[in-house]
Length: 47
Image (cartoon, rainbow, N blue to C red):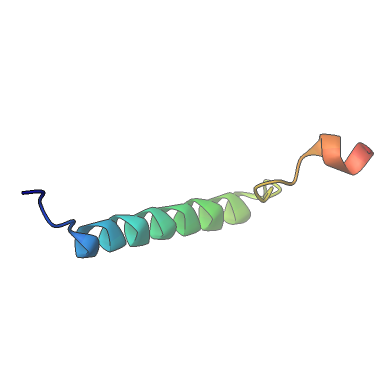
């Protein structure tokens, strides 16, 4: 019999990853570096 997936663990991991990304973005903003979103590349701006 297959084990039941632990959705609360997956949710917590996703939440931690999101929080870490948010903190990293905050640190970059404070240091004065331009923040690039996913999908925003200079190649797409030149096209």
